[in-house]
Length: 248
Image (cartoon, rainbow, N blue to C red; front, side, top):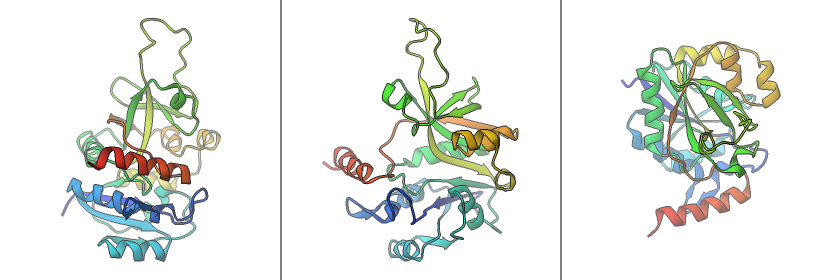
């Protein structure tokens, strides 16, 4: 029995693009691309957690196990917590269902960080960027890290703020947070039992709830990937990305 469970939250009722996870992306549903990347890691069982029988039916067609969860789940984290109840695995890896270009090596890096660092409650990933369009985009979440990779803060704002731009700091990158999480089972149980925190409510970032409660989040650097799917425009961008990177 593996110590890892990979759980993919897959809400059909997305507000900005309903049914996005079943949208066709170059011949497959978006969620199938994610599922296949998870399988390639060989870490352990992969399950899809969804509120929709439509997703469950689609998953069965490409050989995936999908578990029906409550429609009242407030977040993907709540959904994977519900799906992982009574499971024996020590580590739960949360891979977003709208990230069709997630790399197997990214999932593995997060899983290994979680398993190898006894001090780590939650593991996640970041990419380095100097792209001002990303840095100033509130939908691109920035992470502030300690030298050991521990997350000090996450924000939708440009952080850390460079008070003066100098030759020394102008090429110091910002860290773009990627929405994959690994939880020790007891950390996931603790996290979902907590009420929303003040900073979480301000920034609308649930990982701040963990930081405010004293939980330790560690980050691993990964290579930038393709677009996540939130809007119809994202889906078109994903099609172009796929053609550029995965077709000859």
